[in-house]
Image (cartoon, rainbow, N blue to C red; front, side, top):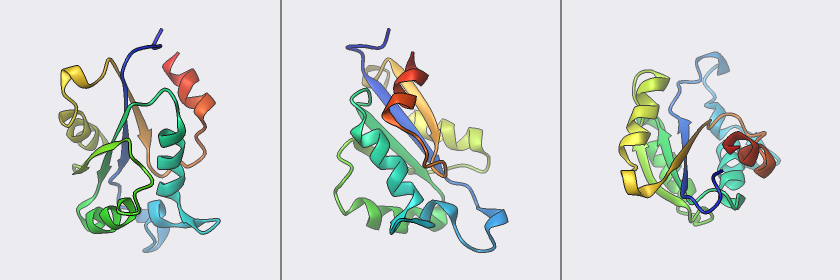
Length: 125
């Protein structure tokens, strides 16, 4: 169904991590890498994904830019600030995609690192 069509992913990572006692979960370490790195890596590796928009909070924008400066995620086309609620953050990510940019859009929570290429493909199907 989605083969030979452009697919974008919006990674929403603009939450406040209120229950994490001061630790922002997207930058919590798993095997020496931030959670966000694992998420971005899965979408970067996926043959289904053509572009990625990353949505982060104001307090994390500089941290995210430093992480992205490592250059491991070439599919990221934009980083933007999220909104007050998750739906506002998704809307901000959607604004970064032109109608010609993609036929399909996946939305994924940046604090959920257990995502695989197979899961991405099944989600599209």
